Image 1 (cartoon, rainbow, N blue to C red):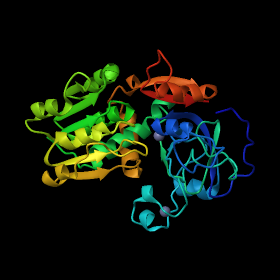
Image 2: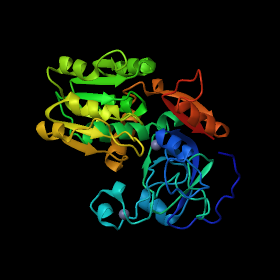
Image 3: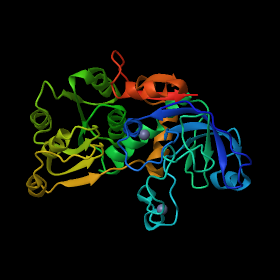
Image 4: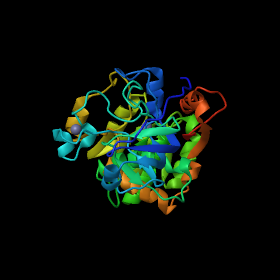
Length: 350
Ligand SMILES: [Zn+2]
Ligand SMILES: [Zn+2]
């Protein structure tokens, strides 16, 4: 990674805009991109796909379509859907097939005009296909960037599994998305929320309890599945795996849900198979397994309202605010590559 100066776009088109960034969140996807683990990306590019900022300039048509004016604060969704393919027209724009590859902020070449396609910057182009959400002026920008992980928690731990009052739910992985899942499960009315993590995650597990988890399990000291079965008298209704890389939690999730339960797979594992996966367990228990990719409008909106409500001390989840110059170090800190630094959520502020 390196700092580069790029020109601002000239005249803004009637259906586009320009965002002045206030902060941009960092997540595991930034690390994968940084490592080159995402195939087919058009480098060089400006990373950053969780941007919050203010409208610096806006064309007349865009202002009318988006209902915003210069100076308004907005959170910008990652994806730039085409709007016309079957998934888009059926309301599943996360699965848009109209454009090749990953079409979204943080993933476009700087050679695609006007080049400013990422949130790790002072300014970002607002394409006509942008999906954005207005956001209160009262929230600190770095906290506002939590719209992304919180939206993920709401979609993965509440909307996809259909979590409802009285449900029991196991969340595997206590990172920013795991903690957001705790909040989402609590908001949904789950009355037994269990979060698992490693010994090194103790401070995150503690925060999980503060956000509403009823039990936390250190998988290095306890047998996860056995403990879950004890707590729930046989198994949880829902298990959500948000852990990155490790494949063992997939098997644990399948073993920890009750008969007829639901497993949501939302953690990126990279190109490796899941060892010890026995499909008979899915068949025999009549499990429902659902994949979760990204977040959409239906989850971002409640996430933003929840942030604005101030109901949860989200600032405890936000551990680092760093300048653009330290983007590379920020990504390394999030990936636990810098000794002595423990992060949950990091935002870059220009
Ligand atoms: Zn992200
Ligand atoms: Zn589409």
